[in-house]
Length: 309
View 1 (cartoon, rainbow, N blue to C red):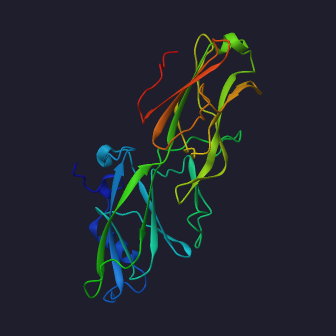
View 2: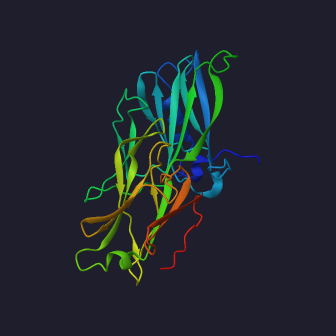
């Protein structure tokens, strides 16, 4: 299937061509401005958004903003201003190796940048979850990520400003989790005043570094829940940072402040993992002599649970 670059003016506020040109000039390093462009490379960057299967979802409106961060061999250099034209333009000295990191939907209502100062490495620069008053974390946004490295030696075939094109392929970094209980009140009794049932999901890191890896301390999510007339709980899908291959989520059930149940595996003993770009639906059934935990992993936004309460 033929894909086309995303038009930045379709996901960012509209601007004017003159302002775009001024911004592009401002992006060029001091040795790559005006007529002094010998030994410089101009990168023309387009953006493509894909799902976990590699399908192009650029025009779906899933990504509403893109922020670009420039690193060199010494660490973080600068934020690339938001573009107002159809592409991002970046000018750098010829032969200088740089890395460009793009985040899609990096919204500051649930996420924050941590440790991003000049010279910070890709490993130490972080996107971190915000905390609630009770110390647990807010869910993630529908976060996307891309990283592209440039050697600075791209096709120096003409005198003056050399041009190179690249596509930033944004992939979904967040996962989704939904949880449903069965016969909870039959097993543990009805919750009395002041001891409401709660769900807390722990595991994975509470941050992602600019290499795209989970890091930091364990995250703790306390999702909003619905309670049925029978006392069962349902937590609709909420977004979390992904788990690594050697890590697992743990689901803790509380009655008031007392932890009454916890699990980090399903019935087969497999760890509860949340792969990036996937949705994990967890059913916890207390109607049997031994509690049963079943899991279904599906593509993003597919409903895998019976949501009738």
